[in-house]
Image (cartoon, rainbow, N blue to C red; front, top):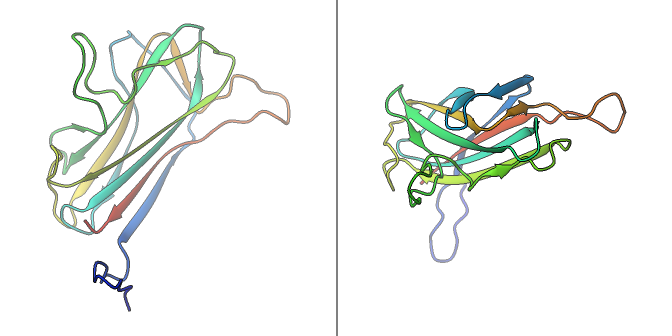
Length: 178
């Protein structure tokens, strides 16, 4: 039994096909030159539909090692191990800026404070520059970080008291009927 609105726009039993929550609680640190992307996490997702609509929700926890350090994040997808496609960047950039990262930049002016960055994006297979896929294809999702100093992923800047904890980074993938 489906929901049928008076105008007939919804005849499916539901639009959400599947949802996968990929938690990453491993304690890691990332340090490199300010222009080198480093892979933080990766995982596979098997589609149920061809060219479905994907809701990509990323949440990164951690803190930076010094005040004034600029860092950024990049997310992407591959279909069956093929070409990398970036999710959500603004392709209109001034000269010298990256068209692969998801924010202008994230500054570590309060390195003693832990933070969380949330990033939401929606895309459809074979639309707006995204690759196409068939039902049963493997989509590999990944997240990178880039920037100055050290990013302490899934770590807290304070410890030893009951009021301190550590966040767990995650990416949630929801597949919808397009």
